Image (tube, rainbow, N blue to C red; front, side, top):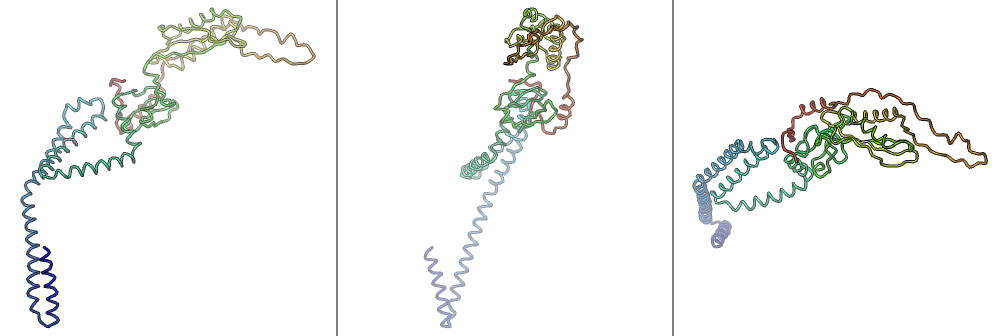
Length: 366
């Protein structure tokens, strides 16, 4: 190679030398050298063309393998077996289809590279993909975290649509679970979007999971009253209310002694599927108060004694005991059946959604 270069340089200087002397005989030698270079390049191009033509059948075979892999992946992703694997979860069904399709395509690409004897490219491609994946992972950390949390919750089904829940201090009715957020409707009728990552790692209180729910309230009874009789009157009154469960039975017990009264706590259980929790608790308070007053029980308000330091004697009227209220009849009960105030709003919102809901009421829950 070095000898050829030296010959070309010598011929060029020779041509210049002959030109100065008026002798152009060296042009023939330079022309022959240039013709030799063109012939060499043409020969090299023809060799490359012959190599390409020789590899063309293998290239076509590799492309055919990739096409077959793509078609086979699409065919497998539509099989009934995959439908049964994730038949209750549209998110998992689509994820399974995509994973199968791309897995088969990846195998086809590796086979094609092996046919082309280009497996050395696999390491470079995988290395580049790894670096790119790490960069994208840091850039879209929150998005990926919400996506994975939505995937896990779609498998676990921690709650169902229209469940009354409290998540991280946020109370509302479950509307839908998407791939990025959990949608609640607050008791005021407002929409609340909670990131799936927050929902996944937060404490969740579900009021609907167990239909039986206990209510309780305290009533102050005069210190001079028969407390056992007051407890029995209140418990029997709660037991007779429509919607109160007999098992567990209503209870009443003393929880504290105040300055002017004894605090008695009354408890009862309600079936939330048939009766409204808040309405029944309100009615129980009203009925117990009426029964105790009708029995002549003293329900004193807080009394504060103020002592005045002066020379004048304290009036005896200040020490008089409050008179008991006259017995009164208990008013009729009110309707405490369960109502669906937010039902039409939630149904309209669910029907207007274009993104699939990952919650399935019929799926097993954790």
